[in-house]
Length: 346
Image 1 (cartoon, rainbow, N blue to C red):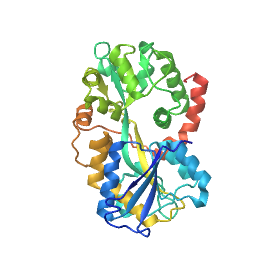
Image 2: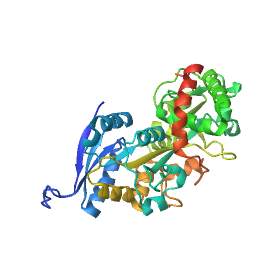
Image 3: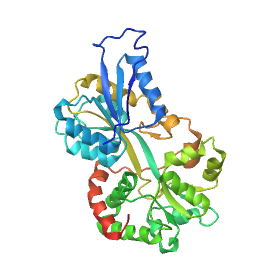
Image 4: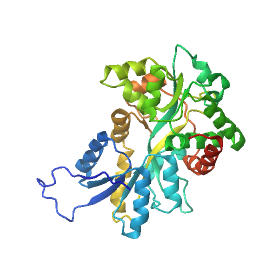
């Protein structure tokens, strides 16, 4: 398990003479985006609560929580994948909470199911849509306007996609399983394998660049990778992104798949009231706008106005997203992983 760094956000710590008794929340975060630092600083300025952050990936954070047990200093957990949120919840690593602010702000399908007391283990804070990019000189938009069509034999040797075991794909496949059932999903996955232009490799940005370079004609990516390229100061990367077509699949059926970055209070938090306040801050208009404008993610709060030209260009201003429970997507991934092994999806 690799812990990359520990950072403390407390504006004017020395200048203000903050004592050791001042409230500090310990944040275990799988979000490694430099732009998030402004979020934590703003929270400290507005509340006086310092944020001490430990960075690791999702798996590393869960392993650390298990190892620390009741001695864990963690107060808030931020994870960036539906399956990991579900797994942590199922292992009892989160403290179920009540918050009318969070319940009002976050749609039901983007949070955990309530327990018998009406408490929730975690809440989504932002989403990323899993979209299709394509070579407009080779493919017409209607050929790739659903996920199902990516398995059509007509795309043999033309599909680029990252590893099937990556959380972004596992969540997509878990959603497909929920929509289509076991048999149809396995057949679809076989079709994807048959259509691959090469063995899965690289991240989502690599898939985009592979379409732009002609290595493949169609690829799957998360929206924020495409938005980064569209907003890039690198003229070559920006031109690559602008040359491609973008589709939010299944607009005429169940909607485009979205994965979620979510937050929870740690099971053994010593500062749960401050931790809940931090979660409530993350669904405020200013924080939600930061997710959209700072890191090219979609806000979870309904009807929030934001100004990110790349997101608006890709989606035309809005899109229909699926509304299946994220918890179901997480539960399906064990079955999907077995399918991937059977069909040879590396």
